[in-house]
Length: 130
Image (cartoon, rainbow, N blue to C red; front, top):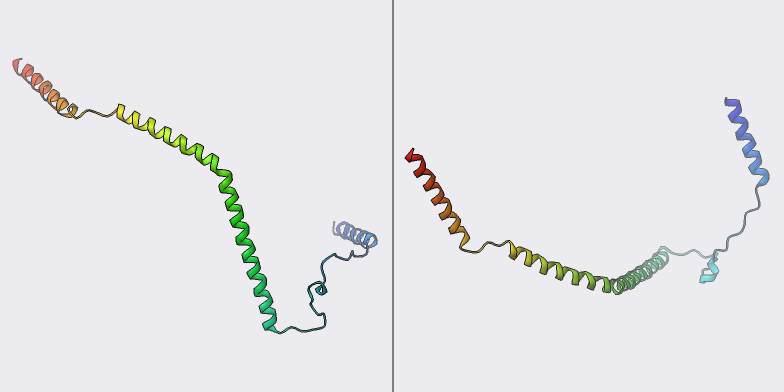
């Protein structure tokens, strides 16, 4: 089993080395496009200043993109928000009407108390007659 695995690995490596192409040069921008001198050594203060300016520009770009996206989202959601605002008002009206339908009038509690007292009194009187 070990010989089989070693043989497969050998064949794979041999195939890869024979079929490998020359590396393709990348199209990345060189330092000269930005005015960077290739033989010069930069001080740490210059490097920190460059990095800080890149970070600051990145923060501004991100904040601006976020603000633009937020504004766009608000504008797109406005009609939908108005629809749900109208729906909410209608549901609130229905809820108030439904609650009013099941609301007990003020006289119902004393009437229920009096009716319960009378029913208890009548039942007590019938028991005492037996």
